[in-house]
Image: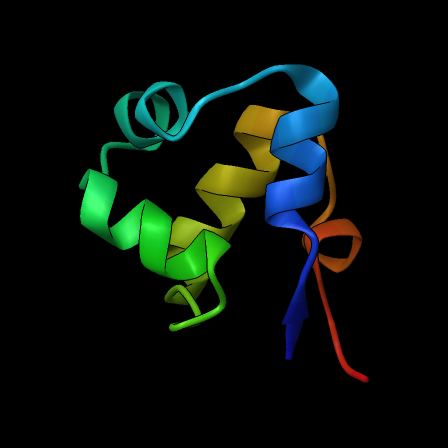
Length: 63
């Protein structure tokens, strides 16, 4: 799985801290997801997508 979260966050001028607070996840978790070191569990993926006004498919995709 590839992740566009870093690109989307930059486009919208959002920080990792902002996202972590909005989705109730640790900064470490958000950093790990942004840097593609881990894939979030489905409930967290939905919260991230909803918070950013995106669909999950807009953020994560298969190569």
